[in-house]
Image (cartoon, rainbow over all chains, first blue to last red):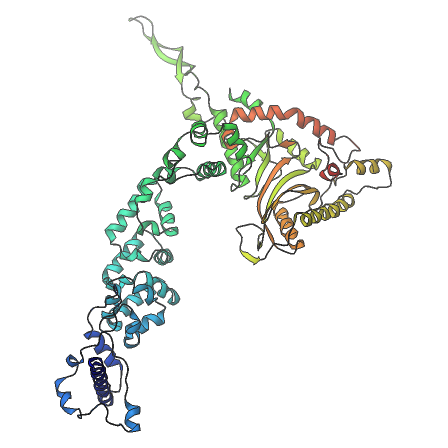
Length: 317
Length: 317
């Protein structure tokens, strides 16, 4: 019996909303306003636990004056056909959800982002991302940053994937972004190179000038490269700047060894079945020793073969 | 000291070119290493020269300026003033190998470069091992080229491959005789043809004197090819065509020269052995064979100099 009552209550409340929409529809033809008004009223999107749609408390949403205008209808009162057609009974926007699917039709920002090619399904997996996107206004914040990215050289069809990775760029200050690009230009990176770097390492522009400077200096010093070579390296692999430096520091010796030496020794170890570089497994070969020891010691101790075997193997490459 | 080292540095020797290295870079590296060896030597003792100097001579009462012969140190021949004794060495390359191929590469130094021409004119055959991969076709017939087509290869058997290779060898046999411009009606020509010694001594397209499959484990297969007037690209195209004949596709993953004329893998020097002494020893070791072979091939009326190993086709028969 009580469940039946709830159902009636729910139906009644829904009817009230839909009729309210009807009346406000006639007053304001654009639905956009409802969407944006609804979105600003929404509390934070919570995607951690999938919650079922709570029956929203509509009482807070109905302005008090409108209540007087409503005809006192009983839910079982027959309705004429014309009135029935005019009832728009969309489910109300949930205030709390785990996906942006519920909001995308009501938010102009989200729609424009989807048209650009941004993958919202990936963004909503991050906790604060969806909140950020919903709160932004397309005209004010997003448009300027998009124009800036286009000026940089990122094509229209590349903006989507870029923003999917680095949506946080919208929370950056435009002046900061311009300063960072100016810094890169001062280091003699050409415009095309900067565009390529930003495309391949989307988080590059989110790094402060000081951090970028430190990282460039690190690579130049540790790998003992000339300025031009550091520049070429960074243009080809900009993720070095944004990624973690731990593996680079650990394997510093390997990077400073000549490629053919590393390749030959590795292929020999693979041929013997001894190429084990994982410290947790047995027969581990440390990369430091792997590159630094001279040939005879490498053959005897690490590969456990004779130098003649190594030479014979080299002649089969 | 340098000049007597140079005296022993005239002749032909073979190096093992690793894959990924351009032949020109290899030649330059060998030249640099040889120069290092030849210019090494203890610095000469400080020299003196005789100069006639004006100086006061005589007792205190009568001083007069006269020329006296004195020995003064001179720096004219100091190594820091005139530079190293040798600034360049003439190193020539025999039959070239492209960057991705590997194997025996014959180099000539000093007067040995003349022998390179003689070796070219002897039109000796070369041995290659070629690795192929069934199932794909690329634009430059290499494994890392742009993919053009993929196909299945389940229907390929060892017998089919052997049949195709025999067909290839047969057709090239005919071409061998045709390009060698020999009148087969004479008895000597017939004798030589029977012993498999017919070879064209002029320019001709690539000719395969012997081809057989050493190893077949689909999708990989390994072939041994004896050929002349080839380029490595034509050998890779051969792999592609074998794939087409087998009604599938194939790319070439390795081209390795195991013999160039009379230089084999055992004579080839590895990268660690590219220094003055090893090269001098290699030249000495190869000198008698070179002399014998070239003398044989330059014998008048002998169009095709034979090598110690007859053509593969005859060996199988």
